[in-house]
Image 1 (cartoon, rainbow, N blue to C red):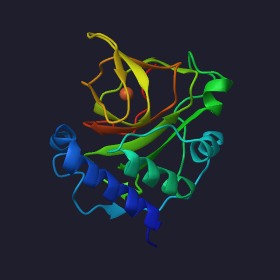
Image 2: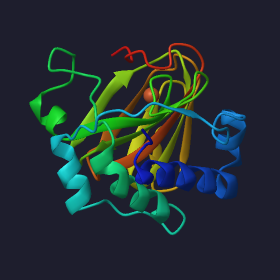
Image 3: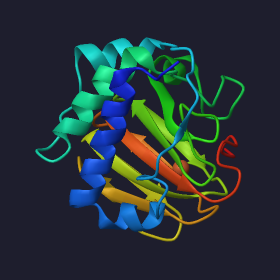
Length: 199
Ligand SMILES: [Fe+2]
């Protein structure tokens, strides 16, 4: 069974974007973004937040518009998930109604890689992602909307569409979505690529 065509379209959109505009992400990924991936179809799963992303998407910029369009096309055909529950500190029902993510490239698929995880996350306006950390190194690519990234060891970064924000292994970071929603990709490399972040 092949993956849904919109997943190939989304991978192509990331490959094209990073090749043209994000040499830092290309270097971070080495061959893992452009290689031929094994494929593992996953059952599609929707979340409450998907309707918000489809009905009223945040604003992209000229270079990220194709990524936003490709994410929205793929949204009904991917497995949207959440890492947290109300038992996690700083996470409540409002947070869980207004956020979600899916893997595009990951050890568990749908495109399979043991060296790269590329996930896409969406947070509605009004959320605060509490301070957390994880072993893999990370680059966020902001696709649409904006957020303030608060990372240990540096000044806050106000990031609009088309920004990259890097975190080294286990660098604590948080994100403030009080002013706008954010659609972003997260590229991870290193060990424990699918472990839950530590809050
Ligand atoms: Fe992170």
